[in-house]
Image 1 (cartoon, helix red, strand yellow):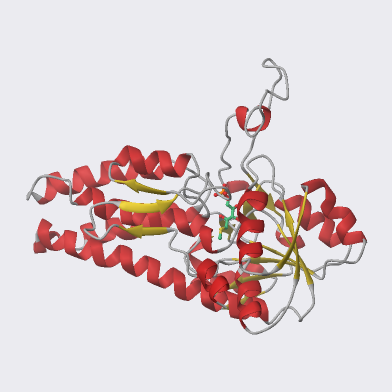
Image 2: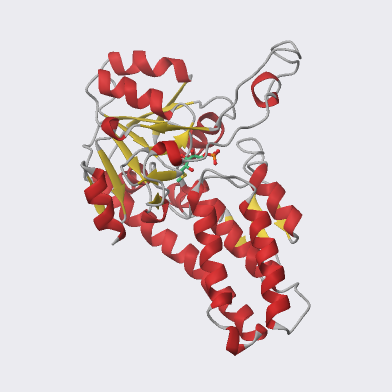
Length: 355
Ligand code: MRU
């Protein structure tokens, strides 16, 4: 059980003891090294998010919220207008680090509302409140992940095979995770699952992080290349697919790591239920459909060079490297949130969730 707890309760993002910096596990170093980084400047924070040292939609939001508290303490003025101007500048900068996961702007907006709502109380008091707000955001995420795990667990049986894509475990959130949460919770209760983890090209979050988390926790995990999912499903080894999410549009279309929509299409073909698990903070009703979700494009080097000793394609070969794709709502069997399992028609059910 301790081995399990070490993973489910991992301190992936936290404030330093003096509250003047954010301490993260550098996820790019896993699974070979567990290295902590201390982030004290806006550039440190931006780079850590952009370079995926901290990643996963909820974890990015939490890191940015802690970051705004840290940066607010460095703004050297008692004047409210000057303070809020500089605060906004930092907020916009961090917000531009990654565009797809709505949790980033959601958490930053929450922090900004604290500043906007306490003009009369003065800068010192606002900083105190910002400290409380970022801790609250993390606390809420822990509670949401736990509730999502409970609801997710109700969808599967002991002994089931589960396929997952990318990483939506404790490293991507705070405690338990979303898509992996039911598996950890089930394990805690003596249940056993057989998990297939897509390696998740090009950045290998499935290989580096998901298989690491599950293996360390003593859960039966088998790593597969992304193009093997179809065969594993055809073999009858998968009873459900569980994936995380970065932004859910009002109609239920869901952005998640590139390759997720392919998994959903395969699952649909083989009549395997496909579930999206995430906190209600990932729902963005301002996006009517998935077409309104901005998809992050990343460097071709991640495809051609990253993780290889030598480039795997000629320098001049063109590359298309979208970091996310959108799964059509028609392929999603249910959206599992901290408030329950939401079903189609999503336009109706998600409105109720947010309302
Ligand atoms: O690029 P990443 O690694 O940040 O992408 C992460 C994902 O796509 C996750 O599935 C998603 O953020 C949910 S994490 C609970």
